[in-house]
Image 1 (tube, rainbow, N blue to C red):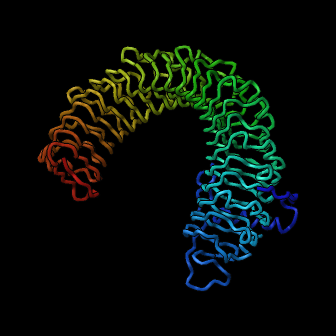
Image 2 (image 1 turned 120 degrees about the horizontal axis):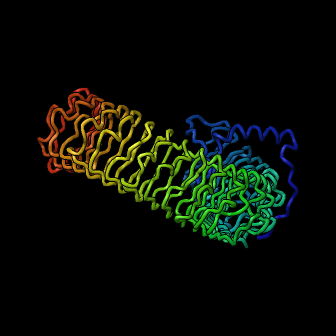
Length: 596
C-alpha cells in the first residue's frame, strides 16, 4: 500500500458551518448512530429502521434500503454483497452493518463527501477491499465503525475530522501514523480483539491527536505498555494481553487517566516500579487482577477508589504500600496467598474511607483485626477462619454485610458476644461451616441470615429472639427434624418472608410458621403427609416447594390450601406418585405440569 499524502486538518469549530453540523450531529447521535457491541461504554444501537414507505420518496434511495430522511440511508441487514450504487450525495449517515460486503469501491465512496457517520460493522471487508484512498474525500466524517470485519492492517489514512473510530474484532496486526494521528477532534478509539503486537504500533500513532479520552487495546498481543499514548486519556483498556512490564515513564504524561484496566496479563513485581502509577493524580479505578504480583504495587495515588488485586500471588499486605491510597473505597484481594499473617492487625486502618473488602479464597485463620471503622462489607468466604472472639469484630461497628461462608467455624468457638458490636449488620452468611447450633447474640437488625450446609441438629427460640426485621432465613442442607424445632422458635420472626428448610430430615410441615411468610422451601425432606392445618399460620404464602419428598397421590389433605388465596406456585415434582393439588378458587393460577 502507498501512504496517501497528508493534508493539514482544520481545527474543529473553525467555521460556522462546522459548528452547526456538530450541533446537529449531537442531537442525532442517540437515535441515529449505530454502536459497536464490543466497544466499552458504547450502546448496541442499530441504525434506525423506520419501515418501507408505500409512498415514493422525494429523494433517491438505493433498492432494498430505507431513507427516512434525505441525509439518512439505512441498509442494515439487507444481505448486500455489493456496495449500493444509488446513494444520494446528500447522505450524512450511512449504515451498511450486518451485510456481506467484501470491498468498498472508491468511486462510489468518494461521492459521499458530506458523510458524518459510516457504519460498516459486521461485514466481510478485508484490507485488500479497502483502498488506501477510500476515505480521502470524506472530509466531514466523524464516526466510523468497521468492527467485526476481516481487516489485517488498519487503513493508512482516516479523515482529520474523525471523532470515533471502531476497528475492534478484526485481525489487525499494524496501524500507521496517520490512521489515528493528526486527528485533533478524535475522542474514542476501539482496537480490542485484534492481533496487535508492540511492533504494530508506531511510536507516533497518536501524534497530533491530543483529545483522545478512550482507548481500547484489550485482547491483543502486547508484551509491554505502549509508550507515547495520548496524554488526554481518561480510560485505557489493556486487559487480556501479554503485558509483563510497564516501562518507566510510560504513564507519566497521562495525568487525566481515571480508569486503567490491566487484568489478565503477565505482570510481576519487577514489571512495575514505585513511579508506575505515582503521576496518575486522577486515577480512580485500577484493575490488576489475574496477574503474577507477589506484593501490592507501590506508589498508588491518593485518588484511587477501586483497586482490584484478585487472582495474584500476594502473600502479605504491607502498610507502606497502601499509605498513599487513603481514598480507597473498594479493595479486592480475593484468591491470593494470604496466610495467617497475610493481613497484620491495623494494616488497613489508614484507609478510613474503605467501604468494601473482598479477601475470599485465601488462607486466613482469623478475621483481620483493627479494620477501618467505616467498613460496610467484609467478604471472606473460603478461608480457614476457625474462631470468632468477643472483640474480633468490634473495630467495624458500621458493618452491613459479613460473609464468613465456607470457613471452619464450630459453635464452640463462636463467642456469644462476637456479633454484639455489629448493630448495623443486615446480612450475615455463615454457610458451609461446622455449626451445630444457631449462634447466640445475633444483631437484631438482620434482614438476611444464611446457615445452610452446616450441621444444625436443633432450633431453639433464644438465638432468634428479637430478630423481628429478619426477611430471609436459609437453613437448607442441615440435619433438622421437626421434633428438634423448639416451640416458639418462629414466634418473633414477624417479618420473615422466605424460609428455606430444604434438604433436611423433616417428616411433616413444621407448625406455627411465621405469618408473613411468602416463600417456603421444603424440598428434599422426608415429608409423607400434609394435613389440613399445615398452613393455617401462613395466609400470605405465594410459593411452596415440596418436590422430592415422600408424597403420594392422596398425601395432601384437600383443605390444606383453602386459606392460601395468594398461592400461585406449588411444586410437587419428584415424589413417588403424581400429587393432586387443589388450589383455592380465588388463587391465581399458572399452568404447569405436576408429576413424579
